[in-house]
Image (tube, rainbow, N blue to C red; front, side):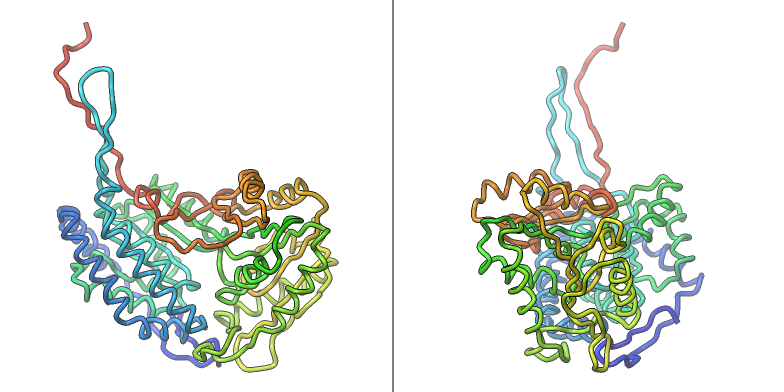
Amino acid sequence: MAYQSINPTNGKLLQSFEHMSPAQLEQALAQAQSGFETWKRKSYAERAAIVKQAASLLHAHVDDFAKLATLEMGKRIDEARAEVKFSADILAYYAQHAQVLLSHQKLHPKHGQAHIESSPLGVLFCVEPWNFPYYQLARVAGPQLMAGNVLVVKHAGSVPQCAIAFEKLLLDAGAPVGVYTNLRISYEQSDLVIDDPRIKGVALTGSAAAGRKVAARAGQNLKKSTMELGGSDAFIVLDDADLDKTLPWAVWGRMYNAGQTCCAAKRFIVMESVADEFLAKFKRALQALSPGDPMDEDTTLGPLSSEAALLTLLAQVDAAVQGGAKLLLGGGRMARPGAFMQPTILTDIAPNNPAFRDEFFGPVVSFFRVKTEEQAIALANDSDFGLGGSVWTQDEARGKRVASCVDTGMMFVNNIDWADAELPFGGIKSSGYGRELGSLGIHEFVNKKLVRSGDAPAPA
């Protein structure tokens, strides 16, 4: 039973779901293709009315959606509410701005007139993860539905109820059947979907391993794809950083969503002159976190998403220690029911240690000391990933200079505030390719058609 809703706070099975049968999958794809033929002909105003209504329904039922996410993947209730609200904001943003973002781009040829116009590709297949069960859906649904595409979506097997709720949201908002379809399918069925000629594009958010497989399959079919594949973001603390302002961001950046965030701060690169003070304060702050029921407003540390996620992380920490890393804090599971991991700090991580390259998807800090700004930049760039990162300094010009030298898709100076529908999200290297959100996100799956006019004689 691949689609199981299990509460990670106590390990109890909430509900199970069967995979779609081949006949059900075929019906879903046929309805999506039929839905596209209708949806692409709707005006921006007609699409916007539905997408805006979905945003309004999310805002009106924040608690209902949030509690479902907390039950299925353990997200603390205040973080779950924030995710629902941000998802609504994304939908509302594209409902308002899509027409302008996709307006004709005028060109200036030597003779006649020319422009580039944007038109939808068709049915898109989206594969989405469990860590943000609504936001991940909203950031493809908002731009792509407003662009005139329709979506068939394979959500993570651990959040089936969130997936059902989001599909129902769009139907309740007035979306025609086939415009947004939740697929409960196996990996083998996913390959069949990518191969299907009705599918015109593929978007995945997940691991690098999953990205390689899905991108290869899409490539074999000559289909456009975007990949967001995780990260190991550097949190660079320069010698002039204001630690009173930096530390709260360090805790939030590593521990938000129990550390299960692609663009979380994961590698803390701190200049030697402030390293001892930073590390001591950081350790105390992590020790002060209060584990408990994520439904409880007073809880500041929730569980990981599943028992499997916890066991994977524990094994990574053990391998790091066996490879020579020092365990400054934590390193084990908590003595309580559920998938709770102790906040953990690893230091003295050598380049040949697996922890030097791996992504820790949970509350594990990798701590590094450097002597110079140049060493900080070099270490930040010595990563297979390139999603995001941040730099902390009282000299903003210096921060921007360092940010420009780090090879990632996103860099932040004295903040890690990526939650804005207008800002593009995505990375380079093993973090994938393509962008979601912002003006770039809505252009990923549209045909950029050149139209040139003008009465001119044929060449002699």
